[in-house]
Structures are given as structure tokens and as C-alpha cells.
Image 1 (cartoon, rainbow, N blue to C red):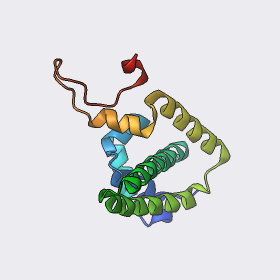
Image 2 (tube, rainbow, N blue to C red):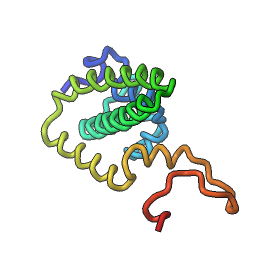
Image 3 (cartoon, rainbow, N blue to C red):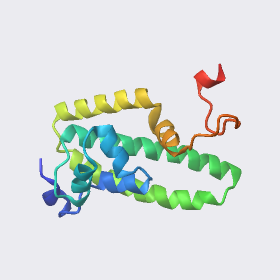
Length: 158
């Protein structure tokens, strides 16, 4: 498998570009894959190579983000919301990043693909998917006497 310099002319990885455009911060990526923020920064610039299984995991995260955004886009379209156009443009960028990354991922060994898929499956189950994770990170805690404003989970509804 080629390194980032050969695959992307030293510009980093499309998956990281896509995750950034989707609003997933490098700090969060570092936390999830258990590396330092400076390591993610090196991946972004292409000066360091993402381990293959981690690359598969991040690609699956991006695909999941895209899927969630497409569901939202359909809902907005059904309701005639003006935000739908902005979301559509963002989705085009994310799809482009995903396609570029998948070309690179085609050279990843099957063992690493299985490992990355396993990492994704475990992360997805633990975090209730991308939407749940992003929502948890973006919702500010409310004062104790305030009415709940975040999404209601099954455990909160019981």
C-alpha cells in the first residue's frame, strides 16, 4: 500500500477532509482512535500514515455521517426547508471525499478491512452511531431545574 505522499501528493487523506467538512473535529477523531491530536494533524497534512484498520474505521464513520445527512436532507426536502440546498452542497463534497478515499482503501489488506470494520461496529454500538455521538458532543448541559432540551433516549423516556 502506498503512503499518503504517493496517494495524495502530500495533501493528507480525503477521509479526514470529509470528516472535517462534516463538522467532526480532529480532537474528537484523536480521542476515538486513541492517538494524540498532533498525530491527527500529521495525518491531515500527509506527513504521517494512518494505520490501515484506522483508515477503514474513519472511512466507515464518514459513510455513516453521509447516510445520516441524507436522511436529514430528505426530511428537509419533504418539509420544503431552504436549508436543504446548503446540505445538498455539503453532501456533494462529502461524497467526493468518500469516493477518493475508497480508491485508496482498495489497496488495504483484507485483514485490516475486517479489523477496521470491527472497530466501527464496536464504536457504533457503544456510541449510538454518529448522530448520537455528535449530538452528545454539541449539546451543552442544561441547568438542573431546566426542562430537557436534548434528544430523549430510550432510558430517559422510561
